[in-house]
Image (cartoon, rainbow, N blue to C red; front, side, top):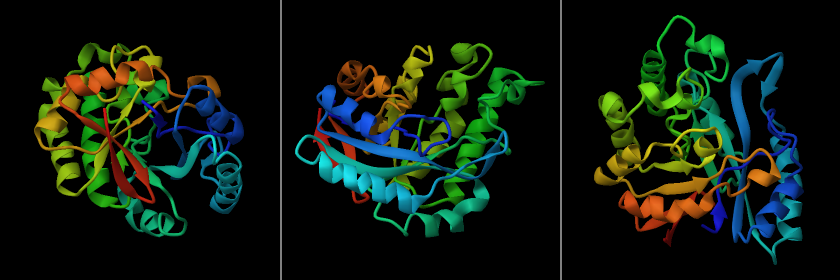
Length: 266
């Protein structure tokens, strides 16, 4: 895998990484391309801080770095938007104001609560929390159109009390299938996010059974990202990705340039 399509820098509230260090990390690991995708999570405030950034400063800084390193690596400029049902109009305007290469749509809030915090799981089983998250995800993607791929589909399982113990594709197949079919019908993809492995799960996001089902349903658009927030996590466990994707029926993976899918043979 020669392209990491999901990473964060100090423009994101949860990262202190210098953008230049993230790019240099990609170069040191032999990548041909990186896409920096910092968080724009409108209407999410945690501990008094907003999950948004100055998009003008972002493009100014990253454009300079893209030019500086253009002979060594292709630096692309993306964004990870936080999906909520009421933000369709906001993101329609937001994604058109700058020439993004890739827009990842991710679900970080379920009923205004983040499963990262243990309070989300209070008074419910892991399975109940996972089902609520998938239902929310389906609602989100039906109300926010302006993204290219859905990020870390089963992200919530990182934070369950027992992580994967109460999770499988078959257990939630009805709602997961609705999500996958909607994405495919509307020309959107999913991502393979290797951060699941970093967080101690026995799978990258999403679970291989979900990947297989996506392919069975006709899904073809799949980007690959490590969701790195530090330079040392760039391209995390990418050596496992080609065989994983092939075992799930894929012959190609996807990169995005100027919001257009580019298919690369595995």
